[in-house]
Image 1 (spheres, helix red, strand yellow):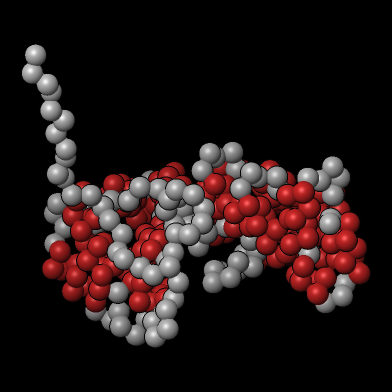
Image 2 (cartoon, helix red, strand yellow):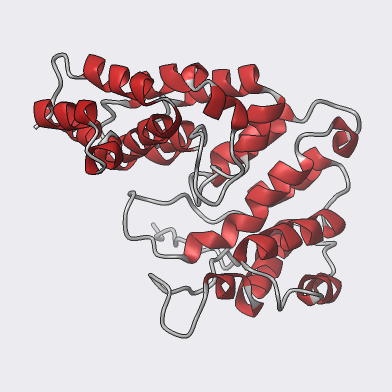
Length: 290
């Protein structure tokens, strides 16, 4: 009997541009979204969107790009995606999701390559809130699906925030569901995306004023098996401590009960800044959490 031969597919696959592990001398973050990233973006999109005009996309992407910083480049390229993908948002999202590389494995040592997906998350935050971009239909589910997949490859902490402002209850409910997700990148988004004062991101003024709506998420994640997630929880409580120190101290005091070594680390990390300023309650909590 003749052996069956396994035929390997020669179909091109999505790819990421080459990127350093950290910013090198003489380079900046904005270099991550330069010529190589644009060529990679064209390659990935063309795999699933054969009507894409690479030359027109390339010209549009480079127009006005040079002086922009990394965040502005992300928004600029999101606008380019809007002009060159299907006009209805849900169809454009399907193209974007079809062009993704495999999810990240592990939570450390991924370098700066995932910044390639900054335009993708800005596409969701810029165009995924208005039904007018989606043929009059509610875009919430398409946007949540996109962010769930994108955060597994980069982070949707920037794009989730406009949804928390526009639809706080339904977005918090979805994030609460995601605290049970098997992917630590998704679980981390639940804490990191709801931080009141997340660096580089729009401030969640409502959560600065009253952080309590996000507390069930922190409760669900305080003993997460991944340090990557627990660190985010600690930083979130640290954000709360900047505006509501007594609430942050109450949370940490409650968490001291039957606290594991991992949870004690979360408590120490959460109150480290007020402790450095000599705040007695923070110093007491850190001492009890040793």
